[in-house]
Amino acid sequence: MSMGVVARHSHNRVERAGWIAWRDQLHARRSRLPRLPTFSDCAIQHPKGVEDFDFRTMQVSASIRYTMSTEWLLIKGASTRVTRPGVQFPALATKLVYGQMRSSFSGAAHCEGCRSMKAAADLAGGFGSAEAWRRLGTIHHISMVTEGLAALPWP
Image (tube, rainbow, N blue to C red):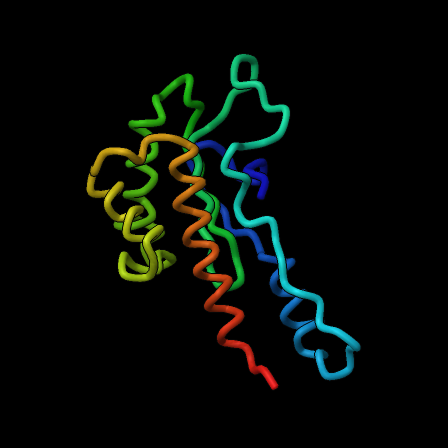
């Protein structure tokens, strides 16, 4: 999921087009298909980041990718060269858990990823890196996909 659609210090919602297309076009017509293709997406991002990204010459912004039922909530801070990730990620977590985006937050009891996101908003240590947030976002994403698949009617 590209963060290019989000301005610095803001957030945006982007449709989960792959999920919606699979659910509404393939799963909905599964009885007329010889075989239902397995749902798969690229999650939020590979835990090691973008291929060929050189941190020495390219700037990166602190960001959170949060899966909702039919949308991605993308939250972006500033360049990590301007403000340290250890400062930015807890601030972004606070916006998600307690701030203007709290209605999109599934709650700390939803999954381990959400529990840790709340802990980060409550200033627990260990959540100040992009790698940590890819891990938390991926845990939450897999939980959302599993719940979405389980909620569908199956023959």
